[in-house]
Length: 244
Image (cartoon, rainbow, N blue to C red):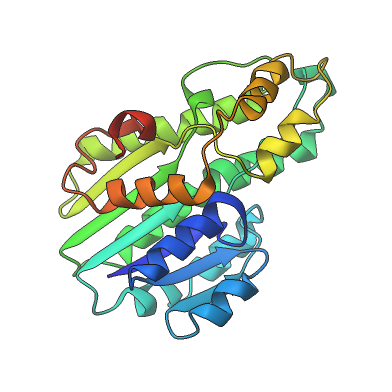
């Protein structure tokens, strides 16, 4: 079994990578920066690629090569975890930097869709192919100040719904909201000025009352679901409803 994982250097992505590797699953980690700790711990099963996933031209050039096909070759069960993403820009639309909008759309939408297509094309002989987009409750509920984040995560949900209708042989897909996880992104959210993100107080309360999920526990439940028999039964799901 082999897995391709984006954004494996920190946060939830690092916890997912560690969980997969601890189960003996080889991981190809793709992010701007490597994970030195995991590389030291799993030198034979972690392969890393330094790639700016917000740079669509760079992603296109990388996918034109043979890395995915070579990595996945010989494995009957192959996984793609599209985890990398950004919450920026935050704030009302008139104050958003257009370059930051472009960066977010490239990272949150273009990269996972490109990887999903390339992953599927590179694994025609695998008996079991699974794609999980790491989505968000923001895909299904609008938040003031998060128009770009909400829209990009909703795009992943609808992509999964549409792909599921294609009935591609030996392919399962799910856009999965993991819940509110205690990561650097959450810390960033809690420092956002209220005039930019009026919903900040909800996330402050979750931190204060212990309502944030631990990344390692979330990763365990997420990987359990990804590997379970029920994965892909619904193309859009929430880990809090389906995870153990």
